[in-house]
Length: 335
Image (cartoon, rainbow, N blue to C red):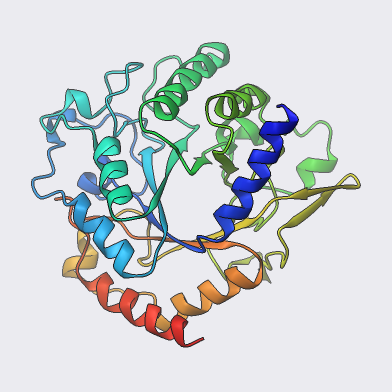
């Protein structure tokens, strides 16, 4: 990366922090199946959301005071919300056919919001997934599509890295792995992480890269290089210990200081994707006062809050979110 590009990247981080508040959108076959993680074998003929209202998603985000959004372009099941040229497992092979990523960036930008994308490293559908060399090439090609066909991408939110990094593919991280040379812990080698990072910044020097570190390691990078850090879920208790996120955008490793702003994220409902039990059952919604407090805490740490809400299986954002979002905006605005 040239000095000019490095300066541009640092400026992009500073600009990103001024956005403060964003909408995280989990939508796809998991919304139809009502599962947290699909298995990569979804019947594509079942994907045809009859009332998808992306303009409505954008309008709600803008009304709630949000300034950016991140959409799940590809989750762990491998289904792509854009007509990728790398696999048939995408919207192009469904009755719906339309490019959801394309409509998303168009509608959100029209509403005045910047747009980012979530991309799962883990892929339960792609047949060459276990061939690391072939899969890295697959990812490079997909990321090139996303960074070439949709204008400026604010951030790329990577997830699922544990499947090839952690011993046995375990989701939960064990700190003992770091000091045990025989543990098998890896640092992105099988993902070709350095190549992915360099590819992203070659195509879009100002696109910020984040790799989810998990609930139990708030604000600790999975490994470098990254441009942002995650705090996934807020007020997490792990092994009887309250996980406390850092209170500064600066990260110290091996004596080097890295400017890595924090992105706090949480969800309005118990899971990230919509389920009908939220519509027909009983669940506790996040309180407006809690949402406002999260925003204040993120701001105090020099970071942003990315608040998740999943559209229903028909593609509409549940109407009950509006009450809490509008009240949270009023509380936050009062200070």
